[in-house]
Image (cartoon, rainbow, N blue to C red):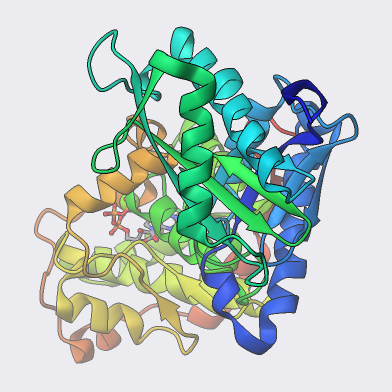
Amino acid sequence: MTENTLPIEEILIIRYGEVALKGMNKSWFERILLGRLTSALARIPEAKDYHVQRDNGLFTLRSADGKLGAGAVPVLRRILKVFGVSTVSRAILLHSTDMADICAACAAYMREKVLARGAGAGAATATTATAGGPLTFKVYGKRSDKTYPVSSPEMSARAGAAVLAALGDAVKVDVHNPGVHLFVHLRLGGVFIYDEKEEGFGGLPLGTNGRGLILLSGGIDSPVAAWLMAKRGMRIEAVHFHSYPYTSERAREKVEELAAILAGYCGNIRMHIINLLPAQEAIGKHCPEELMTILVRRFMMKIAERVAQERGLDMLITGENLGQVASQTAEALVTTDEAVRMPVMRPLIALDKTDIIEKAEEIGTFEKSIEPYEDCCTVFLPRHPATRPSLAQVLEAEARIPDMEALLARLTASAETVVIKPEGGK
Ligand code: ATP
Ligand code: MG
C-alpha cells in the first residue's frame, strides 16, 4: 500500500491514570468519565463534529470523516481540564497491523505531522539536535497484542529504518537524547502513532466521591481548596457570606466570577449567598471585641452546616491553612472545628502559601482572587484579635448572644441561591 492509500484516521487518545487502577469499579468509573467528557464537549461548539468512545482501557475522540481539523486544539484544551484524564495525545490510528503498512505510516507521520510542524508555528516542539541540522528521533514500539509475530524492539527497529529510508538527511536516529519520541502502539486491529503527550490533572471523575460545600471567600485559598476536592471526584456547592452594605456589590460579583472559573472544572456550581451582618452585629454588641473573628468564623461554620444538611451534602470544605492568620492557629482551628458536627475538609491545611499561589495560578483563579475587594471578615476586624482563645472562653462569649438558634435559622433561611455557570459558557 502507498502512503496515500493507507487506512489512517486522525484521533485524540485520552488516557485516564488512576481510574484504570480501580479493579472492580473500573467500568463504573469509566462510564462516569465518559459522561463527563461528553458533557464537557457538549458545551463547546468546536466539538460538534467529534465523538468520544471507550477503546480498550482508554478513550478515543474521532470524527465522521477521519480528520480532526482546527477544532482539535480547543477540544484538546477542554479535555485536559476534565478530572480523571491523565494525558491526551494527538495521534493517527492505522487500521492495519501489517508491518509494511506500519513502516509506511510512521514515515508518513514523521513527514506530514512532525517535520511539517517543525517548519511552522510548532517548531519549538519538534526540537532539532543542532539548529538547522537533521531532526533526531527514536521509535518506541509497543504491542498490547502479544500474539503479534513481531517483537516490540524489532518493530521499533523496522519502523525507524523505514523513517530513515523515506526522509533521508532530514532525520537522524538518536536513542539517548532524541528530539522526537515516536510512539508506535500496536493494539488489537490497529496501531496508534504519536509523538507527544499533554498532561491533564489526573484525579477522579466528578461525581464519584460525594458532595461537599465550600465556604468560598474572595481570597486565594478557598477556590484552590474547592478545586482540590473536586479533582478527587467530589461535586461542589458553595456558600458565600457578605456584609452588605459594608461590603460592596462588586465584592460579591468577584466571588461569582471566581465560582465561574471553578465551574469550568466542576460544572455548574450552586452558590448560596448569605448576609452575615446580623450575626456580626449581635457578636459586636454582646461579646468581647478580641473574640470577634473567631466567633464570626463559628457562625459561618454553623450556618454552612445547616445549608449543607438542607442540601443533603456530605461535608464542609474550607481554605484554612495552619498558622496562616490569627484565626488559623492550631488553637483557633480547634475552636472553629468544635462549632459543627459535620466533617470539615481542609485540603490546604499543611501547604505553604507559595504552593497555594502556584496552584491558584495554574488553575486560573489567582488573578481574580487578588482583585482588591473587601471581605466580610475584614469589616469588623478587632484591633487585637485573640490568637489562642480557649474553647471555654469562646463558648462562654457565644452564650451571651440571645436567641442564637433563631438567628442561625433566620440567616440560613435568608440564603439567596444562584447557579453559577462556567465562564463564558452556556
Ligand atoms: P481565603 O484566601 O480563602 O479568603 P484567608 O486566608 O483569607 O482565606 P480567612 O479569611 O480566615 O482566610 O478564611 C478562612 C476560610 O474561611 C476561607 O478559606 C474560606 O473557606 C472561609 N471564608 C472566609 N471568609 C468567607 C466568606 N466571606 N464567605 C465564605 N467563606 C469564607
Ligand atoms: Mg478570606
